[in-house]
Length: 163
Image 1 (cartoon, one colour):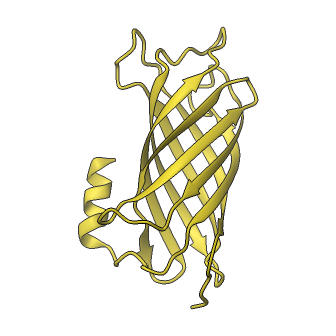
Image 2 (cartoon, rainbow, N blue to C red; image 1 turned 180 degrees about the vertical axis):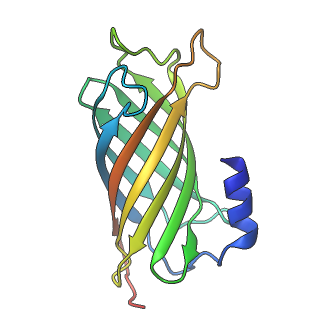
C-alpha cells in the first residue's frame, strides 16, 4: 500500500485541483475472502477537497449486516488517468466493534487499506469498485484480518464544473 501511494505520488498525472468534496456511498460484501462471518457491508465516506500535499483527508463509517460497525478517518490519494479513470488508494485507522462467535478481529483498533477504481462522469460524480483489507497490525492477541469489496458512488458537493 505504501509503495502504491509513493508510486502514485511521483508517476501519475496531477491531482485535479478543482475536484469538490464528495459523499461516497458504498454497498458490497464483507469478509468475502476468508468467509468466517460474511455479511452485507454499507459504508459512507466524507471525502474532503482539502489537500495535505497529495493527500486528502476523509471520514468513514460502515455497518455490517452481522452487527459489526467501523468508524474512522484517514487519507487518500486520487490518481487520474485522463479525465475519466480515477484510482484512489487510501488508508484509515478505524474503531471496530461487534465481534461475533465466528469472527473476532482481535482489537478495537483496525487499520483499513483500500484501493478503488472509479469512472468519473462529466458532473464529477464517480462510480467505482473498491477492495479493502482491515487488520489490527498484530497489536491484538490475534490478527485475522478481513476483506470487503464494494460498489461505490461518489456524489460531489458544492460547486461542480463540467470538463
